[in-house]
Amino acid sequence: MIAAGCAVASFGTFFSMPWRLLPFPIAVGMLAHAVRWAVISVAGGSAPAGALVACTLVGILTTPVADRRHLPFAALAFSAVVSLMPGFFLFNAATGLVELLSIGPSAPPALLTGIVASGTTAFLIVMAMTFGLILPRMLYERFLPSV
Image (tube, rainbow, N blue to C red; front, side, top):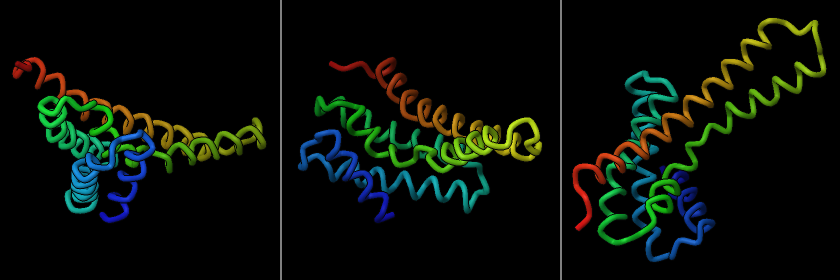
């Protein structure tokens, strides 16, 4: 979890977030990573399911804070979860595509299924992150409009 906090601090700084605001997304990001880990390791969920639950939690926690303090939602929420991006699966798919290009038509079917599996997993994680962050925000704006 400490590594997650360092990643959030790095991304928050990269997004030019004032340092005084960093403790909140760091804490939320560390909690999100712990929840993601629990969904995958303890509950036996998939990587997309872990990302969905973690990002939904982040959306729920950051939306009212961003609204009340007039802060950019993206800076708070996305910096807390940007390190959940599926780099491992994207690199696996890219590596497989390069290998497929070098082997050509005689590539084994296992290579193709590996590329599709990694690419699909990456896509599902990104979609889960998107819906997890945006849905709480949209529901908050719909049912609890700002005054």
